[in-house]
Image (cartoon, rainbow, N blue to C red; front, side, top):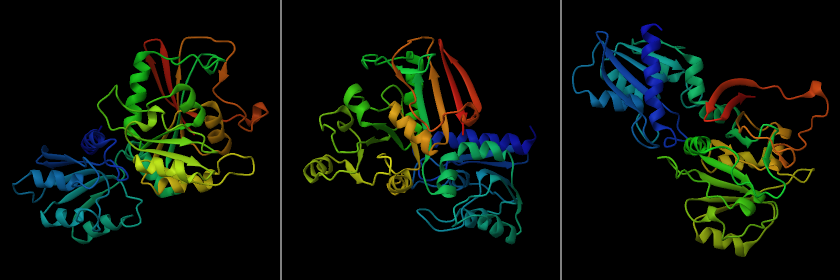
Length: 357
């Protein structure tokens, strides 16, 4: 790696410290270098807190004239919850700015680069761009398609079963895999399941195994049949998505700090994701971790509304049982969904594979 790449990689590592806390803002880290030495670092730690550039600049009380600032995302140039970072960079006399990629937010989108260049600051863009984009895939998906980034998390046996026929098999994978799932949950804005999962497994859908933020919980419940005594209502916020009006139940949920989203069904009797996903995004949710069950997985696969699959495979064979997927609209081998493998990890006997669409 050259020096630009080394410092942008450090920005990426710093940015990850804000994971789970900055949404719907992007993850951003910043490094300031003078005479080939790092003199200050910063990162965006929470939504509404100082941006990474401001954090790094304000930590250094000395003279920044002639220094180089590294940041994984283009500095903002507009007033939001915080002032423009470009103004601060110019004011402190920074000579050069190196960025991973431009910001797709229409309020920025190249304007930050233009302002810096107009002030006589040298700007280098596109350093470790692919890694920087992977870091902020949630943010980029939202601004490119106006919907949340969607990950399907499937835990299954080697023969593709997620439960036995009686649904009595609560855990398929081992403890290490389950802890990692809690870590994943902490990185997403919301975790989503179907009504059957809530009624059969009665999960908490929290992050109690790790030190992380609990996501908002979303339940797909076509006809509002959910019981309010389920564990998902005990703490945090839960959103029930339904097509059936029930004012009494809705009032009870609102009183407990939860929310109901009413939405329409499609011609097949399933949820219309074209309508629903923008409704969810309107709640400030730009990433969803889908945890099942099989009907829910299949509906996302069938409609194409998913971006990656995280698959946990346990070294077990069940033979019969509940399959991970039902009908996804594919009947011939040449119609198979083809994915890109981007991660393979062994977890005490389990195998984690991650695929991009």
